[in-house]
Length: 84
Image (cartoon, rainbow, N blue to C red; front, top):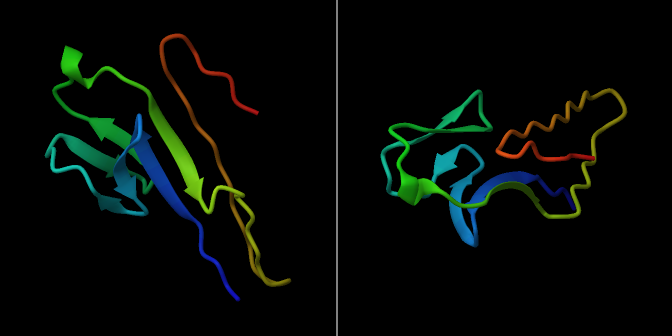
């Protein structure tokens, strides 16, 4: 059985994006280069924890022997987040 990972941006428990779809009805949200979340005209009410999670959360990726897989993680914030 083939499982495809779907990346989700969440603000707290609310889903903002799923794969390349914007779930939020807020027109200020946009995906750049597929996975980077952009919020235009940021205001104090936008404060919160934004998380990028893989679905399924195991993050397991299965590829064929001759295929290529590219995995990348980026994060920024105040204070600077730690990633491993």
